Image (cartoon, rainbow, N blue to C red; front, side):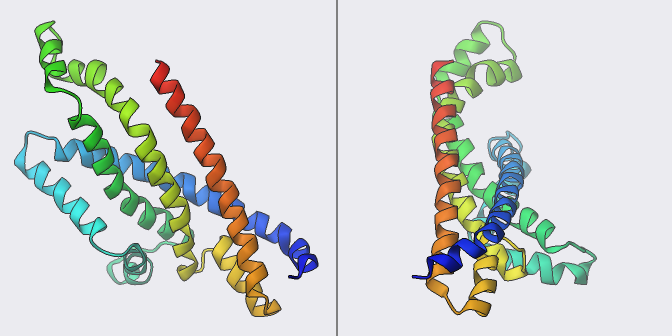
Length: 215
């Protein structure tokens, strides 16, 4: 194993890791937004919103994320959507992640006993107040860990954007393989950096989970 080569290219992989981190954070933020809206739609009293929420989840969970990226990046210009590779990666992966987060958030909310809402309404709280002050705080305790799992999956899924030439860890490894002919060393270095990012994310999720369990 060529350790000297790995040390020489290591700074370039760090730059790529920072791109992966930015991509992960922005995608997670968009995914959480889409997931919250999707869960609200699926739990709505309006049939049309429930249908739209279910259609969103079925569409984006039922098709490969890579195909969704290709449609957005390569097919988008045909319908007037012009995005650079990074923007397409964030939007494509974010909407895809939101479909999974929709079910995570919805599952946490519906797992709260219906008697909690009825008790809150009996005490004079409105529907919104009962949801905001009683249901959501309890649901938050249940959704942190599953959302952490979604986040780990999302970080690994960022490797897909290498297919549309976003210069993140996987793309950087592929590029250096072409010039060094050392696939083992390059992918090992990329894999180690992915592990570090996922480990730090996991520790942050564990800390957040402890905090919400206390409050």
